[in-house]
Image (cartoon, rainbow, N blue to C red; front, side, top):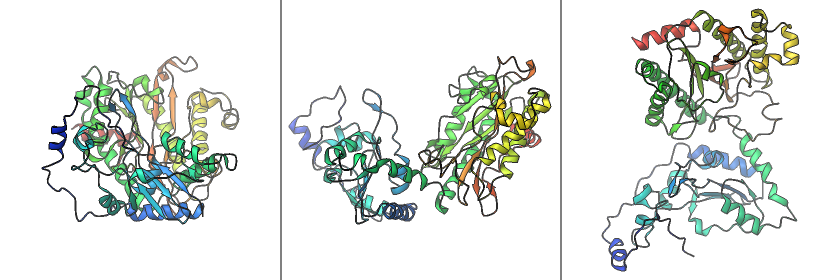
Length: 472
């Protein structure tokens, strides 16, 4: 059965004469000498590990589908992270199948031949003239170092574990084929957990990609500081800076790894402020939480809180230094074998001591750690795993992640913060509306952790000196 073309609502009918004319007169643009992607051998190892974990079973991992933004316009496609991890491929509608034998096939839609059909010039979703060239099956096999076949050859009959919620058509096909009375869901939740947990420890190639993402992010932060004089004069200064960082992300990578948080003044007290429509005031601080995503989809996640005047005011510095001390203590706690939650608790102990010393909370730090009253001023955890997703491995079981222990090769963020709301009457007036977060990316080493984002200063004196140099 031929799939219908994804034509627009204003598409004109095609005459037989035009259809015939469009099938002829094209040069041969098949590519020779295609080289395997650098990720290909690593992806093969990951597929082998997956097959070994579920021996004798069929495993189905889709890439995902295009999502409509409006009418016949789609959002830019990004494959599911597990699919990318296992293949390095990134086209919509692809499906990876690992057979019970362990053999893997990538079902991928190839470029449409010019000598047959109308897809290449009429289909607005897949046509080469509309969205660009896809590799043919031979090219795809060379790129990804995996057997490739057309999706029309995909037969999902029989029991299988499926990464669900990614491609509705795949879910439906498997549901029709599997006797759910025998094996409800095919053990899909277990597959999803394993695909997340497999990414907890990064391999050498992944760490290199993450370092590249961090390095590009550092350059993006430098761009933002250099742009401050122009942004300060713009009625949407936050958005001006968002655009500056976004330019670096598109020049050096795929895009931003998540919606950038560009929060000036009291906006910094909103944990996920992404409206970024505020004006900048030289007397305020700017909280910038942003990360470049590489073309291979690995993202950095870095936050700095910067004085827009170039120098911290006394109260701004007081709050910043407490967060800096909390982050430094948390970083010092990182090493293999310690509980994942320990670095957060270490940071919160420092925060409690500071809030008690300031007289904001009367109870002892021990009591505050017990009651959690300090959480009024610092609302979330102090870090998370990092990788293909900014909050990587989120589907891992608690016992292997949140309640697990750190291992060499894991990459994570450390990001304590204080968010002193502008309407909080428990605070002295001069503290209200101050938000500070400092976030860095680290890889766990044999005896501690390496600060991947060390090129960005953290100490307030170093921040001021760094800004002074960039601003000239």
